[in-house]
Image 1 (tube, rainbow, N blue to C red):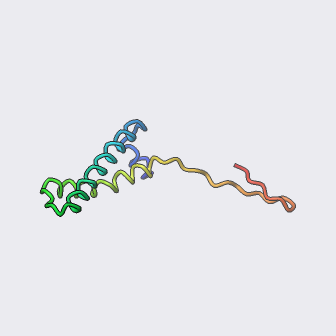
Image 2: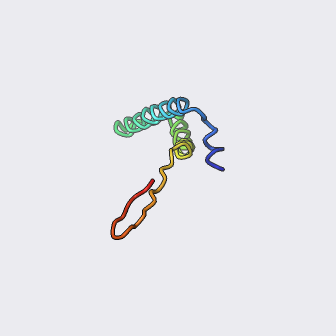
Length: 89
């Protein structure tokens, strides 16, 4: 199954939490540095432009890993009996 293969990228929950935290902090800092430069009408350094590209390019990978490791919630089974609807899990 594709989800099993994708989930193997970062197999442990602790590892994924650390990776998500690092990515989130990096994206936050890069985004705010960009906003600061735009607000002060400064010129963005080349390294920041490259870092913005990398952060944006990696985002779908983190999203895919998160989706692959999200628990699936089964849909409840609905049973109708003589006018009453009962949900059974």
